[in-house]
Length: 293
Image (cartoon, one colour):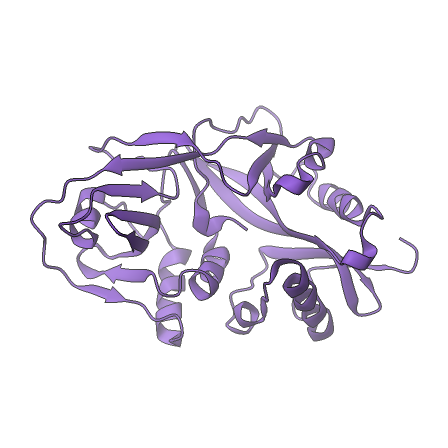
């Protein structure tokens, strides 16, 4: 690209990182600086960018992680933070960056995927991605007698609590063996800082961090982070009230002893997946929200 310089993995370059944040703020209303300064922007999140001087004007970021599908680990690459400055659009910059990603990671992944907004649904099939339906899982719930327990709300403005979350996330049991993700602690910390700062609780008896929200009679569970397999009935007995009638899971639950219903997600983002070899993306699953870039 004439007059432009390509940069990759430059998180510790203050000038480029500042410009990256300015572009992310302009396009998405996001700023990654606090995530970086707290030490959670790790080497698994890699920006591929074009810059004019020190001004980042287009970006495609790579997130390196692993899927767990039916208990088997698979290498995955999640594409995110795809953005171009308005003054530089329609010049093929995103396509050129996507091709650089393909060149860099050729033959080194089982799945590559991304979440796209409806305005660019025609773009990604050109690179071999296919749209996949996601499913939302829920269950009706009848509370049993409340179980007294110690539940501690974690404070993400507190360094010790953030370190505690990161420590457990780094050694976590996958949220689902049917379809889950691992090695995503960096993304989880992003959600902990920016999205769910008021919704993170530690249940001492279960040694589990639960990210959830109460909406009237409904409880939305976004993640359960633990170093061991959890028993969902134990978790539910501690976070529900006498008013609770419905549980919604923002991942693919595979817990024994419960029955869930599922329906296709009609959200703002569409999941696109590209596979290699004989790999097949599982049907009727929900990608864990807290590892969605």
